[in-house]
Length: 444
Image 1: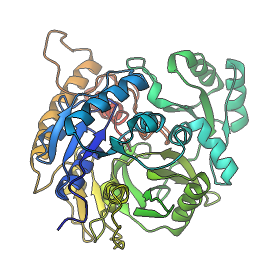
Image 2: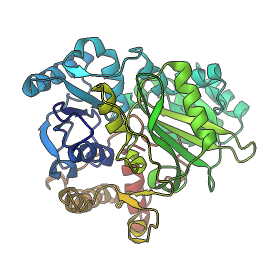
Image 3: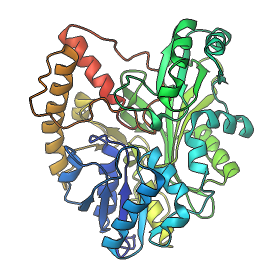
Protein backbone atom coordinates (compact mmCIF):
# COMPACT_ATOMS: atom_id res chain seq x y z
CA UNK A 1 0.00 0.00 0.00
CA UNK A 2 1.33 3.45 -0.94
CA UNK A 3 2.24 5.89 1.80
CA UNK A 4 0.96 8.68 -0.46
CA UNK A 5 -2.65 9.67 -1.01
CA UNK A 6 -3.03 8.41 -4.56
CA UNK A 7 -6.35 10.22 -4.93
CA UNK A 8 -4.39 13.50 -5.17
CA UNK A 9 -2.56 13.98 -8.50
CA UNK A 10 0.66 15.94 -8.95
CA UNK A 11 1.47 18.62 -11.51
CA UNK A 12 5.14 19.26 -12.33
CA UNK A 13 5.81 22.74 -13.74
CA UNK A 14 8.97 23.71 -15.59
CA UNK A 15 9.27 26.97 -17.51
CA UNK A 16 12.83 26.64 -18.80
CA UNK A 17 13.31 25.00 -22.19
CA UNK A 18 15.89 22.32 -21.32
CA UNK A 19 14.69 18.94 -22.65
CA UNK A 20 17.48 17.05 -20.83
CA UNK A 21 16.43 18.04 -17.31
CA UNK A 22 16.82 14.77 -15.43
CA UNK A 23 15.33 16.22 -12.24
CA UNK A 24 11.93 16.32 -13.92
CA UNK A 25 12.20 12.63 -14.76
CA UNK A 26 13.21 11.90 -11.16
CA UNK A 27 10.05 13.59 -9.88
CA UNK A 28 7.89 11.78 -12.43
CA UNK A 29 9.25 8.41 -11.34
CA UNK A 30 9.20 9.13 -7.62
CA UNK A 31 5.52 10.04 -7.60
CA UNK A 32 4.47 7.63 -10.34
CA UNK A 33 5.99 4.64 -8.60
CA UNK A 34 3.96 5.53 -5.51
CA UNK A 35 0.76 5.37 -7.56
CA UNK A 36 0.25 9.13 -7.94
CA UNK A 37 -1.15 10.43 -11.24
CA UNK A 38 1.57 12.68 -12.67
CA UNK A 39 0.98 15.57 -15.09
CA UNK A 40 3.92 17.45 -16.64
CA UNK A 41 3.63 21.08 -17.75
CA UNK A 42 6.89 21.62 -19.64
CA UNK A 43 8.40 21.75 -23.10
CA UNK A 44 8.69 18.03 -23.80
CA UNK A 45 9.73 18.35 -27.46
CA UNK A 46 12.72 16.08 -27.91
CA UNK A 47 12.74 15.21 -24.22
CA UNK A 48 13.34 11.69 -22.88
CA UNK A 49 10.83 12.47 -20.11
CA UNK A 50 7.95 12.00 -22.52
CA UNK A 51 8.94 8.32 -22.87
CA UNK A 52 8.34 7.58 -19.17
CA UNK A 53 5.50 5.18 -18.44
CA UNK A 54 4.78 7.15 -15.27
CA UNK A 55 3.65 10.32 -17.10
CA UNK A 56 -0.14 10.46 -17.15
CA UNK A 57 -0.36 13.50 -19.41
CA UNK A 58 1.93 16.12 -20.97
CA UNK A 59 0.63 19.69 -21.11
CA UNK A 60 2.03 22.63 -23.13
CA UNK A 61 4.08 25.03 -21.01
CA UNK A 62 3.65 28.80 -20.80
CA UNK A 63 5.21 30.62 -23.78
CA UNK A 64 8.76 32.02 -23.48
CA UNK A 65 8.74 35.26 -21.52
CA UNK A 66 5.28 34.50 -20.13
CA UNK A 67 3.80 36.94 -17.65
CA UNK A 68 2.45 35.73 -14.29
CA UNK A 69 -1.01 36.05 -15.79
CA UNK A 70 -0.03 33.77 -18.68
CA UNK A 71 1.38 31.19 -16.28
CA UNK A 72 -1.74 31.33 -14.12
CA UNK A 73 -3.93 30.82 -17.19
CA UNK A 74 -1.97 27.71 -18.22
CA UNK A 75 -2.19 26.24 -14.73
CA UNK A 76 -5.92 26.97 -14.51
CA UNK A 77 -6.47 25.12 -17.80
CA UNK A 78 -4.53 22.13 -16.48
CA UNK A 79 -6.50 22.20 -13.24
CA UNK A 80 -9.77 22.21 -15.19
CA UNK A 81 -8.70 19.08 -17.07
CA UNK A 82 -7.69 17.28 -13.88
CA UNK A 83 -10.89 18.39 -12.10
CA UNK A 84 -9.58 17.88 -8.56
CA UNK A 85 -7.04 19.60 -6.31
CA UNK A 86 -3.43 18.65 -7.14
CA UNK A 87 -0.02 19.05 -5.53
CA UNK A 88 1.96 21.55 -7.62
CA UNK A 89 5.73 20.98 -7.86
CA UNK A 90 7.80 23.78 -9.49
CA UNK A 91 10.92 22.26 -11.05
CA UNK A 92 12.97 25.39 -11.80
CA UNK A 93 13.51 28.73 -10.08
CA UNK A 94 11.39 30.70 -12.55
CA UNK A 95 8.48 28.34 -11.87
CA UNK A 96 8.97 28.52 -8.10
CA UNK A 97 9.00 32.31 -8.20
CA UNK A 98 5.90 32.49 -10.38
CA UNK A 99 4.02 30.03 -8.18
CA UNK A 100 5.00 32.01 -5.09
CA UNK A 101 3.57 35.19 -6.60
CA UNK A 102 0.40 33.39 -7.74
CA UNK A 103 -0.25 31.40 -4.60
CA UNK A 104 -3.57 33.00 -3.74
CA UNK A 105 -4.81 32.78 -7.32
CA UNK A 106 -3.91 29.10 -7.65
CA UNK A 107 -5.68 27.97 -4.49
CA UNK A 108 -7.75 25.85 -4.03
CA UNK A 109 -7.01 24.12 -7.36
CA UNK A 110 -3.45 23.44 -6.19
CA UNK A 111 -1.92 22.45 -2.87
CA UNK A 112 1.12 24.58 -1.97
CA UNK A 113 3.28 25.21 1.11
CA UNK A 114 2.29 28.14 3.32
CA UNK A 115 5.00 30.79 3.27
CA UNK A 116 5.49 34.46 2.32
CA UNK A 117 4.77 34.77 -1.41
CA UNK A 118 7.96 36.78 -2.09
CA UNK A 119 10.33 34.41 -0.27
CA UNK A 120 11.20 32.11 -3.24
CA UNK A 121 12.10 35.17 -5.32
CA UNK A 122 14.15 36.64 -2.51
CA UNK A 123 16.35 33.58 -1.97
CA UNK A 124 16.74 32.81 -5.69
CA UNK A 125 18.00 36.34 -6.43
CA UNK A 126 21.75 36.13 -5.95
CA UNK A 127 22.11 39.73 -4.83
CA UNK A 128 19.32 39.29 -2.28
CA UNK A 129 20.88 36.03 -1.09
CA UNK A 130 24.05 37.88 -0.16
CA UNK A 131 21.99 40.14 2.10
CA UNK A 132 20.06 37.17 3.50
CA UNK A 133 23.30 35.43 4.45
CA UNK A 134 24.69 38.59 6.01
CA UNK A 135 21.54 38.99 8.10
CA UNK A 136 21.61 35.36 9.21
CA UNK A 137 25.35 35.31 9.87
CA UNK A 138 26.01 32.56 7.32
CA UNK A 139 29.32 32.40 5.46
CA UNK A 140 28.97 33.78 1.94
CA UNK A 141 31.60 35.03 -0.54
CA UNK A 142 32.22 38.73 -0.18
CA UNK A 143 29.88 40.40 -2.68
CA UNK A 144 29.89 43.85 -4.29
CA UNK A 145 27.14 45.25 -6.54
CA UNK A 146 28.51 47.99 -8.81
CA UNK A 147 26.40 50.90 -10.06
CA UNK A 148 28.56 51.86 -13.04
CA UNK A 149 31.25 50.46 -15.36
CA UNK A 150 33.90 52.28 -13.37
CA UNK A 151 32.60 50.81 -10.11
CA UNK A 152 32.66 47.34 -11.67
CA UNK A 153 36.34 47.74 -12.55
CA UNK A 154 37.12 49.13 -9.09
CA UNK A 155 35.19 46.32 -7.36
CA UNK A 156 37.17 43.71 -9.26
CA UNK A 157 40.42 45.21 -7.99
CA UNK A 158 39.10 45.52 -4.43
CA UNK A 159 37.97 41.89 -4.28
CA UNK A 160 41.21 40.64 -5.79
CA UNK A 161 41.38 39.15 -9.26
CA UNK A 162 40.14 36.75 -10.42
CA UNK A 163 36.59 37.35 -9.25
CA UNK A 164 33.26 35.66 -9.90
CA UNK A 165 30.68 37.70 -11.84
CA UNK A 166 27.01 36.74 -11.59
CA UNK A 167 23.73 38.08 -12.88
CA UNK A 168 21.43 38.32 -9.90
CA UNK A 169 18.42 36.83 -11.73
CA UNK A 170 19.77 34.32 -14.21
CA UNK A 171 16.31 33.13 -15.23
CA UNK A 172 15.88 36.47 -17.02
CA UNK A 173 18.89 36.04 -19.32
CA UNK A 174 17.70 36.21 -22.93
CA UNK A 175 18.50 33.40 -25.34
CA UNK A 176 21.09 33.81 -28.06
CA UNK A 177 23.15 36.55 -26.38
CA UNK A 178 26.07 34.45 -25.23
CA UNK A 179 25.61 35.75 -21.70
CA UNK A 180 26.19 33.22 -18.95
CA UNK A 181 24.76 33.32 -15.48
CA UNK A 182 28.22 33.10 -13.91
CA UNK A 183 31.73 33.67 -15.25
CA UNK A 184 35.18 34.13 -13.80
CA UNK A 185 36.48 37.63 -14.53
CA UNK A 186 40.24 37.94 -14.76
CA UNK A 187 40.72 41.67 -15.38
CA UNK A 188 39.11 44.98 -14.43
CA UNK A 189 38.42 45.62 -18.11
CA UNK A 190 36.40 42.39 -18.34
CA UNK A 191 34.32 43.50 -15.35
CA UNK A 192 33.73 46.90 -16.97
CA UNK A 193 32.66 45.34 -20.28
CA UNK A 194 30.33 42.88 -18.57
CA UNK A 195 28.62 45.67 -16.66
CA UNK A 196 27.85 47.42 -19.94
CA UNK A 197 25.55 44.50 -20.80
CA UNK A 198 23.35 44.97 -17.72
CA UNK A 199 20.30 46.12 -19.67
CA UNK A 200 20.66 43.15 -21.99
CA UNK A 201 20.94 40.72 -19.06
CA UNK A 202 17.80 42.01 -17.35
CA UNK A 203 19.18 42.05 -13.79
CA UNK A 204 22.00 43.42 -11.68
CA UNK A 205 25.61 42.37 -12.01
CA UNK A 206 27.35 41.34 -8.83
CA UNK A 207 30.99 40.48 -8.20
CA UNK A 208 32.16 37.98 -5.61
CA UNK A 209 35.38 36.74 -4.11
CA UNK A 210 36.56 33.67 -5.97
CA UNK A 211 36.69 30.52 -3.82
CA UNK A 212 38.94 28.04 -5.65
CA UNK A 213 37.53 24.56 -6.29
CA UNK A 214 39.28 21.50 -4.93
CA UNK A 215 38.79 18.03 -3.50
CA UNK A 216 36.03 17.77 -0.89
CA UNK A 217 35.00 21.40 -1.34
CA UNK A 218 31.72 21.29 -3.27
CA UNK A 219 28.68 20.25 -1.22
CA UNK A 220 24.93 20.43 -1.56
CA UNK A 221 21.97 19.99 0.75
CA UNK A 222 18.48 18.94 -0.28
CA UNK A 223 15.48 18.94 2.02
CA UNK A 224 11.80 19.57 2.52
CA UNK A 225 10.66 21.96 5.26
CA UNK A 226 7.29 20.77 6.54
CA UNK A 227 4.38 22.70 8.04
CA UNK A 228 6.04 22.61 11.47
CA UNK A 229 9.34 23.94 10.14
CA UNK A 230 11.24 20.64 10.38
CA UNK A 231 13.68 19.75 7.59
CA UNK A 232 12.81 16.30 6.22
CA UNK A 233 13.42 13.97 3.31
CA UNK A 234 16.93 14.92 2.25
CA UNK A 235 20.50 15.29 3.42
CA UNK A 236 23.99 16.51 2.62
CA UNK A 237 25.87 15.33 -0.44
CA UNK A 238 29.34 15.75 -1.84
CA UNK A 239 30.03 16.40 -5.48
CA UNK A 240 32.33 13.64 -6.69
CA UNK A 241 32.44 14.74 -10.32
CA UNK A 242 31.10 17.79 -12.09
CA UNK A 243 30.77 18.83 -15.71
CA UNK A 244 32.70 20.89 -16.59
CA UNK A 245 35.22 19.61 -14.06
CA UNK A 246 35.36 21.73 -10.94
CA UNK A 247 32.75 24.17 -12.16
CA UNK A 248 29.46 22.62 -13.18
CA UNK A 249 26.51 20.41 -12.51
CA UNK A 250 26.70 17.27 -10.39
CA UNK A 251 27.61 14.43 -12.72
CA UNK A 252 28.37 12.12 -9.79
CA UNK A 253 27.19 12.83 -6.26
CA UNK A 254 27.47 10.84 -3.04
CA UNK A 255 25.26 10.98 0.05
CA UNK A 256 27.76 12.09 2.69
CA UNK A 257 26.43 13.14 6.11
CA UNK A 258 27.78 16.54 7.14
CA UNK A 259 26.40 17.96 10.41
CA UNK A 260 27.89 21.42 9.73
CA UNK A 261 26.11 21.73 6.39
CA UNK A 262 22.84 20.47 7.84
CA UNK A 263 23.05 22.91 10.75
CA UNK A 264 23.55 25.83 8.34
CA UNK A 265 20.54 24.71 6.27
CA UNK A 266 18.27 24.35 9.29
CA UNK A 267 19.40 27.65 10.74
CA UNK A 268 18.70 29.53 7.52
CA UNK A 269 15.29 28.01 6.84
CA UNK A 270 14.28 28.57 10.46
CA UNK A 271 15.20 32.26 10.39
CA UNK A 272 13.44 32.82 7.05
CA UNK A 273 10.31 30.83 7.86
CA UNK A 274 10.86 28.92 4.64
CA UNK A 275 8.47 26.09 3.76
CA UNK A 276 8.76 23.62 0.89
CA UNK A 277 11.53 21.96 -1.10
CA UNK A 278 15.01 23.47 -1.24
CA UNK A 279 18.38 22.80 -2.85
CA UNK A 280 21.39 24.57 -1.36
CA UNK A 281 24.91 24.70 -2.81
CA UNK A 282 27.97 25.22 -0.64
CA UNK A 283 31.69 25.57 -1.26
CA UNK A 284 34.13 24.98 1.56
CA UNK A 285 36.88 27.56 1.82
CA UNK A 286 40.28 25.88 1.66
CA UNK A 287 41.77 28.48 4.02
CA UNK A 288 39.16 28.84 6.79
CA UNK A 289 37.22 25.62 6.39
CA UNK A 290 33.95 27.58 6.40
CA UNK A 291 31.10 26.37 4.21
CA UNK A 292 29.96 29.32 2.08
CA UNK A 293 26.41 29.26 0.78
CA UNK A 294 26.56 29.92 -2.96
CA UNK A 295 23.03 29.21 -4.11
CA UNK A 296 19.54 28.77 -2.66
CA UNK A 297 17.20 27.07 -5.13
CA UNK A 298 13.57 27.07 -3.91
CA UNK A 299 12.70 23.80 -5.67
CA UNK A 300 14.05 20.26 -6.12
CA UNK A 301 17.65 19.95 -7.25
CA UNK A 302 18.17 17.81 -10.34
CA UNK A 303 19.93 15.11 -8.27
CA UNK A 304 17.33 15.02 -5.46
CA UNK A 305 16.82 11.27 -5.96
CA UNK A 306 20.26 10.73 -4.44
CA UNK A 307 18.49 11.11 -1.09
CA UNK A 308 15.79 8.48 -1.61
CA UNK A 309 16.10 6.68 1.72
CA UNK A 310 15.33 3.22 3.04
CA UNK A 311 11.74 4.24 3.82
CA UNK A 312 11.20 5.38 0.22
CA UNK A 313 11.18 9.04 1.24
CA UNK A 314 12.61 11.85 -0.89
CA UNK A 315 11.86 15.57 -0.98
CA UNK A 316 9.12 15.29 -3.62
CA UNK A 317 7.31 12.53 -1.75
CA UNK A 318 7.73 14.48 1.49
CA UNK A 319 6.01 17.46 -0.16
CA UNK A 320 3.08 15.33 -1.35
CA UNK A 321 2.68 13.62 2.03
CA UNK A 322 2.80 16.87 3.99
CA UNK A 323 0.41 18.82 1.75
CA UNK A 324 -2.12 15.97 1.79
CA UNK A 325 -1.88 15.84 5.59
CA UNK A 326 -0.33 12.41 5.72
CA UNK A 327 2.43 11.51 8.22
CA UNK A 328 5.98 11.36 6.98
CA UNK A 329 7.74 8.08 7.82
CA UNK A 330 10.80 8.02 10.01
CA UNK A 331 13.85 8.60 7.86
CA UNK A 332 16.22 5.73 7.13
CA UNK A 333 19.36 7.38 5.68
CA UNK A 334 21.51 5.50 3.16
CA UNK A 335 24.92 7.21 3.41
CA UNK A 336 27.33 6.39 0.62
CA UNK A 337 24.58 6.07 -1.98
CA UNK A 338 25.51 7.56 -5.37
CA UNK A 339 23.71 9.41 -8.13
CA UNK A 340 25.16 9.41 -11.65
CA UNK A 341 24.13 11.36 -14.74
CA UNK A 342 25.10 8.90 -17.47
CA UNK A 343 25.51 11.34 -20.35
CA UNK A 344 28.09 13.31 -18.35
CA UNK A 345 29.76 10.42 -16.50
CA UNK A 346 29.27 7.21 -18.51
CA UNK A 347 32.26 5.40 -16.99
CA UNK A 348 31.09 6.13 -13.44
CA UNK A 349 27.76 4.52 -14.30
CA UNK A 350 29.59 1.25 -15.02
CA UNK A 351 31.76 1.11 -11.90
CA UNK A 352 30.70 -0.86 -8.80
CA UNK A 353 28.73 1.07 -6.18
CA UNK A 354 28.77 -0.91 -2.90
CA UNK A 355 26.34 1.42 -1.12
CA UNK A 356 23.89 1.60 -4.05
CA UNK A 357 23.41 3.92 -6.97
CA UNK A 358 20.64 5.64 -8.89
CA UNK A 359 21.08 6.64 -12.52
CA UNK A 360 19.51 9.82 -13.82
CA UNK A 361 18.05 8.26 -16.97
CA UNK A 362 18.11 4.47 -16.91
CA UNK A 363 15.71 2.48 -14.72
CA UNK A 364 14.74 -1.17 -15.06
CA UNK A 365 11.07 -0.42 -14.38
CA UNK A 366 11.00 2.56 -16.78
CA UNK A 367 13.45 1.84 -19.64
CA UNK A 368 11.96 4.25 -22.22
CA UNK A 369 13.68 7.47 -21.07
CA UNK A 370 17.12 5.84 -20.91
CA UNK A 371 16.90 4.54 -24.46
CA UNK A 372 15.43 7.82 -25.68
CA UNK A 373 18.11 9.89 -23.94
CA UNK A 374 21.02 8.28 -25.78
CA UNK A 375 19.37 8.67 -29.18
CA UNK A 376 18.33 12.28 -28.57
CA UNK A 377 21.60 13.19 -26.88
CA UNK A 378 23.64 11.99 -29.83
CA UNK A 379 21.59 14.08 -32.24
CA UNK A 380 21.75 17.05 -29.90
CA UNK A 381 25.54 16.94 -29.52
CA UNK A 382 26.00 16.46 -33.27
CA UNK A 383 23.89 19.50 -34.01
CA UNK A 384 25.71 21.67 -31.49
CA UNK A 385 29.06 20.42 -32.76
CA UNK A 386 28.15 21.41 -36.31
CA UNK A 387 27.19 24.87 -35.09
CA UNK A 388 30.50 25.32 -33.29
CA UNK A 389 32.48 24.16 -36.29
CA UNK A 390 30.51 26.47 -38.54
CA UNK A 391 29.11 23.64 -40.63
CA UNK A 392 25.45 23.82 -39.66
CA UNK A 393 23.05 23.45 -42.55
CA UNK A 394 20.04 25.73 -41.96
CA UNK A 395 17.92 23.57 -44.24
CA UNK A 396 18.61 20.38 -42.29
CA UNK A 397 16.07 19.28 -39.67
CA UNK A 398 17.13 20.37 -36.23
CA UNK A 399 17.90 17.69 -33.69
CA UNK A 400 16.05 18.10 -30.41
CA UNK A 401 17.74 20.24 -27.82
CA UNK A 402 18.02 23.83 -26.62
CA UNK A 403 20.12 25.89 -28.99
CA UNK A 404 21.35 29.01 -27.25
CA UNK A 405 19.26 28.36 -24.14
CA UNK A 406 20.48 30.46 -21.22
CA UNK A 407 21.22 28.74 -17.94
CA UNK A 408 17.84 28.44 -16.23
CA UNK A 409 17.18 29.12 -12.60
CA UNK A 410 19.20 26.88 -10.40
CA UNK A 411 21.72 25.90 -13.07
CA UNK A 412 25.20 25.33 -11.64
CA UNK A 413 25.84 29.03 -11.90
CA UNK A 414 26.95 29.35 -8.31
CA UNK A 415 30.24 27.82 -9.28
CA UNK A 416 32.84 29.58 -11.42
CA UNK A 417 33.02 28.96 -15.14
CA UNK A 418 36.79 28.81 -15.32
CA UNK A 419 36.67 25.17 -16.46
CA UNK A 420 34.46 25.99 -19.43
CA UNK A 421 36.44 25.70 -22.65
CA UNK A 422 36.66 28.68 -24.95
CA UNK A 423 36.14 28.63 -28.72
CA UNK A 424 38.18 26.06 -30.58
CA UNK A 425 38.67 25.11 -34.21
CA UNK A 426 39.65 21.51 -33.52
CA UNK A 427 37.15 18.71 -33.11
CA UNK A 428 37.99 17.78 -29.53
CA UNK A 429 37.92 21.37 -28.36
CA UNK A 430 34.64 22.00 -30.10
CA UNK A 431 33.10 18.89 -28.57
CA UNK A 432 34.20 19.96 -25.10
CA UNK A 433 32.68 23.37 -25.73
CA UNK A 434 29.41 21.80 -26.84
CA UNK A 435 29.09 19.82 -23.63
CA UNK A 436 30.15 22.78 -21.50
CA UNK A 437 27.52 24.96 -23.13
CA UNK A 438 24.95 22.22 -22.72
CA UNK A 439 25.78 21.98 -19.03
CA UNK A 440 24.71 25.59 -18.72
CA UNK A 441 21.20 24.57 -19.73
CA UNK A 442 20.90 21.96 -16.98
CA UNK A 443 20.01 22.34 -13.36
CA UNK A 444 22.41 21.32 -10.68
